[in-house]
Length: 104
Image (cartoon, one colour):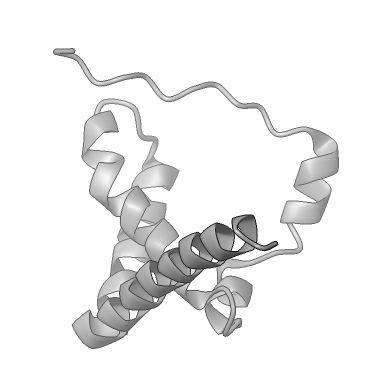
């Protein structure tokens, strides 16, 4: 593949919009059970946004700038803890699934 894949067109149904408008990034970052996932989400967005440099609007550029500022503000130590937690959680899930599968 020599050209990056185009992002899919995924229109947001009104039912989802009405729920999503009540959820903020701050909500996710303040939640002890979700903060690691939120940091990972921001990281994924920033790590892949270069693929779509020909597509963003001015609003998306501003949003990416804000996400970068948030990501950097967490600092390397906090980001490392978040990613370590996600690796540990995945490992725990694999072991639990394997152990549950082998129950008598």
